[in-house]
Length: 458
Image 1 (spheres, one colour):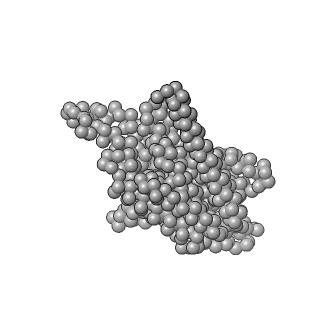
Image 2 (cartoon, one colour):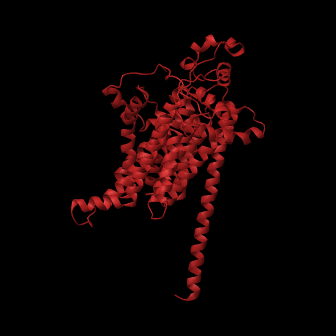
């Protein structure tokens, strides 16, 4: 090959790489715009408070500039009480007008949890970040901190969609299914309830996508990568305990790959040698660091929460016995029920039902299809297997953990598994990538779901 041919080949490769980079940039910007569009359309329609604990989240947000953190046993403040009693609660009802115009301490019994907060469960991380992001929104004329805070949900959502897209691209998945996966996150019931209201669940899709991205980081060698990904795990767990599910799913992928490498046919020697090989594997060490970082971070918060408490936990009236049937019910809670979002989609409208149905089909086909069709001991098999195992075990384990930490069990909502949604959708993108003629299936599903979520009113 002559110098001219070599130069032409290099130029062709550079042009291809440039086109790929431009395409990725354009899609990332498009996903951010789609996230903003959801907020701009839906937030102004929210005339009432979300039934998914938004009342206590509003209280926490309002207290950030004065006390930064709320305490166990603390009374909710006047701002949140006024907002709740004057606006009412979506799907539940409106308070008597007198409670808005002439609030009295004797009315505490009519407030959720007898006027006590339950927001003390959470670190200030989400609320402080939301308050800070809301300040520029207030500067452009939206002076209601609640409405401004609701708009910030699009930032978490855009970050989630972009991180999922980039994760799949790092795994060499073509851009059409990768973009479709990101759009499906934006057009989900999870995003509607979590990212257009004040909700700690706003971090869930971001957490799942960030940990998926962390897996792709640890698939190649490099200094500080384990520390970086472990810090991801600590941050997402501090945002919300349930995000630890995403940490577990990511860690399990890495542990499976490390175990396969240690027990592969090329490995010789005793069992002890294979164990040492496994323990030295960067992926196994990364997985251990991720889990340790998440658990330690949450453990530190549990201690702090207990030390700053000013009273006992309020009785939320939702506790029930942790029976064997309850544990079995929790096994099948998140796969594919997470697509329902915060509440039964049938109670919201046909648009929510369409979104839930699309999500469920994508989840089931993606996870089970990828697991069944993947090559033995492949990365795809590890990801699908991890998604399935964590989805089935997370519910029962979280139920037991809640009894250990809070002293009671309650029927877990589907939304608690929201951080697993990115890896579920990622499985679908990886499956579709195996068949070029199916490359537009996931973008079509994403577009349909995104359009349907815009039809939800309220």
